[in-house]
Length: 131
Image (cartoon, rainbow, N blue to C red; front, side):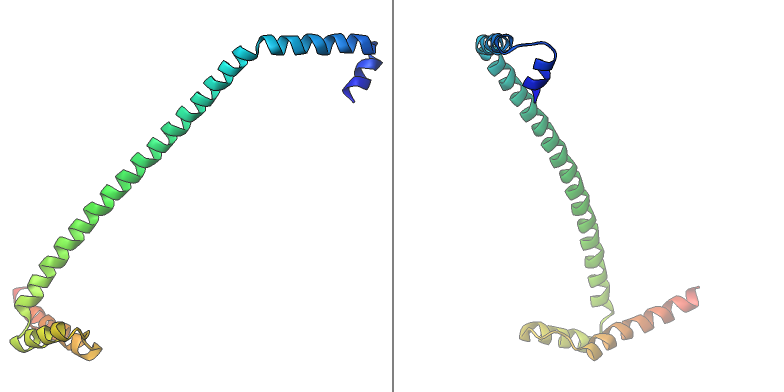
């Protein structure tokens, strides 16, 4: 299609051959330079990918650091809650809990409800007069 367009503009086949030969010579003479240019482009692209990856990794590290910080705080809170529950639990509840730990059976829903409700009642009674 390009050849027919060029022919319409007054170029003949000989002129086209001369142009193609000239282009071929130009490409051959500059092939070394074009290889270097291509290598440079590849290196630039690799550097760009590397910098994007480093940025993404840094962002992910920051997110993970924040998650670790939150988990440490949550762990501390749960340890304090555990200590408080051990303090408020009756000796029977502690013995029952120890037995469940040794057998590996999870506490039943009625037992766990009773355990959580009993310590809550004295705590609410204790907070009533002080309020």
